[in-house]
Length: 130
Image (cartoon, rainbow, N blue to C red; front, top):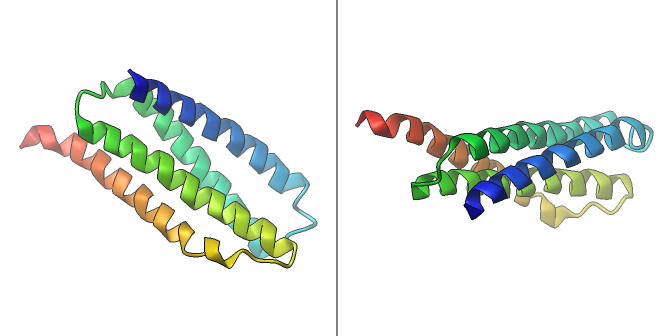
C-alpha cells in the first residue's frame, strides 16, 4: 500500500513541479539563459513530466505484489530526480556564472536509472510469457 501511495504522490508532485518549472523556464528564464541552456532546461522539464505521467499510470495499474514493480517505480522516482534536477542545477548555476560541475556526472546516472526502469517495466510485460 505504501508503494502505491508513494508512486501516485511522486507522480503528482513531479507533474506539478514540471508545470511550475516549465512556466518558470518559459517566462522568468527566457532572458537569463542562453538558447542552449534554455533547451537543456526544457529537456529536464519534459522528461520530468513524462515520468510523472508514467508514475501515476503505474500507481493505478500495478498491484505491487511483485518486488520488480517496486524496482521499476523506484528507478523512475530516483532517476527523474537525479536527471531533471541536476539539469536544472546545471542550467541555473551556469546562468549565474558559477556552474556546479559536480552535477555533470549526476545527469547520466539519473538517465541510466530511467533506462533501467524502462527495461524493468518491459520485463514485467514479457515475464508472464515465460
